[in-house]
Image: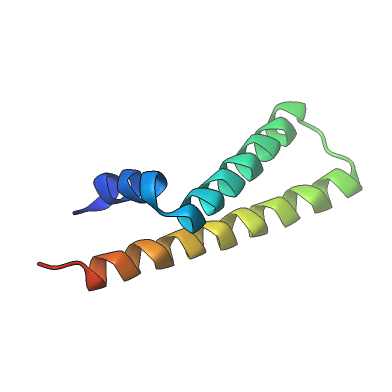
Length: 75
């Protein structure tokens, strides 16, 4: 199973992957609000950078789960 198919399968059956995905989507939603705002205060700029780092860390964790499933799946 590859790419999108595996991701869809994990969303349906892997609780940890589903939770990481939910958290990743939430960070994406919050970042979109900052993008729409335009000019950010210093505090908002800091928060935006923090959210971007969190989002990337969540994506890395999701990718690690995908990689694990790819490596352990029967050929």
